Amino acid sequence: MKAFVFPGQGAQFVGMGKDLYDNNETAREMFEKANEILGFRITDLMFNGTEEDLKQTKVTQPAIFLHSVILAKTMGEEFRPDMVAGHSLGEFSALVAAGALSFEEGLKLVFARAQAMQKACELRPSTMAAVLALADEKVEEICATIDDVVAPANYNCPGQVVISGTEEGIDAACAKLLEAGAKRAMKLKVGGAFHSPLMQPAQDELAAAIEVAKFETPICPIYQNVDGKPHTDPVEIKENLIKQLTAPVRWTYDVQAMIADGAKEFIELGPGAVLQGLVKKIDRAMTVSGRQ
Image 1: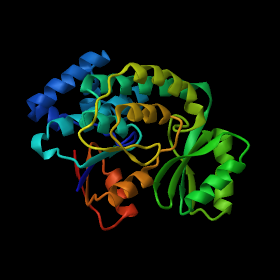
Image 2: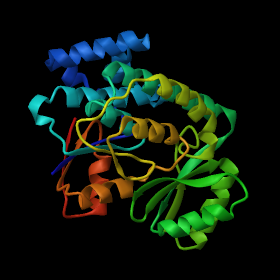
Image 3: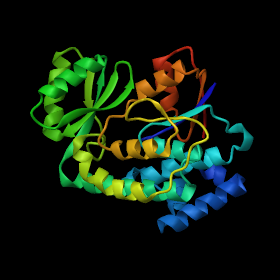
């Protein structure tokens, strides 16, 4: 069985999607439609911008979404997933690729999400840190002892958890995690505390947009970040998507559930190869590949 997976923020690179635009008429039409919807030429920034241009959240998120979704939409008969999943932002790409959301509606939600997250980041200095070689339970236990806001944000694979919170909270947690035996507890260069309670203002803002968006039954189950379980009911999908901004991304559990349900091959659609590496760390027996 085939699982198609979609990357999140951080996988962007200058030139992403240009081959698609140059060589596929459907892709070109979709990119131009996106420029129209967004009100600026995101293609100029994707194809010929600088790394700094692409690091802006309002550019990064729609850029990765567009690259992933347009890849899926131009695969034709080759895009026949038995299941799909996406990492954080990638969940929106997965939903559009699997037909739960229209391309236009998905792009509008992603752009609204990016702007809401940017605003939430500016409210309070916050960050994230990668913790290596410590059990999930130990990371959770230590985060719970910190007086400031700190919480697990991404369960990426066994032995790799990203935590999220205030600058002070992350500093205190990193010190304790290293004492507890973590191989590394390293702050990341990110704009804020994604997937933590500090994203509540963004979640409230995005919830209003998600509530009025039209969701359909996808062509296959989507394994959602908030619970690592398969969903096809549009009402459940919508509820889980609203919770996603303040809840951790349970990627390890997504992949393990897909494997338990019969996945043998994982195909990553979009920039980079991060998810291919994570799948291999979760289960070396899996066949992985990617399309860019």
